[in-house]
Image (tube, rainbow, N blue to C red):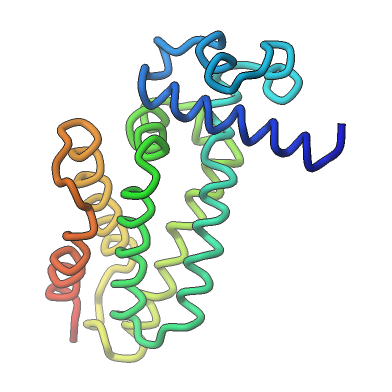
Length: 195
């Protein structure tokens, strides 16, 4: 099997699992559901993943790595901490809006699994979110943000608001468009920390 074909199968299984977990939840989903959606045999699935939980933990890896690269690219081309914050909030809301199945898996299913914190995928997610801390520190140093602003607290507020709104969309279907909240979230946060 060529590397390209192997990667294609791996991705096919991951996306099928993401869809099945989003629709049924982790406990109710079965390996049979996943292989049926992926159109592969159970043996093929086990060539790539050792268990249903292993499969669940691998879902965020590639998507979040790609998201991290996109945010790095954006930060390299935007000046000013407030502008970078707006871009970060926009990108996160856009990401959840355009990846609804992944949003269900990451924000509803994985949040309840204590073992996930010990995985490589968790580290990638954590590192992606931590990219915002130097931006907040940059804003404090440049005088754009108030002296005494707590970067970790600001980041926690940003992520909590984004997560709350996204989970509400997953569970209740509202808001329909997460991107409507980019400016209100950014303006509220900046209103509290702008110098």
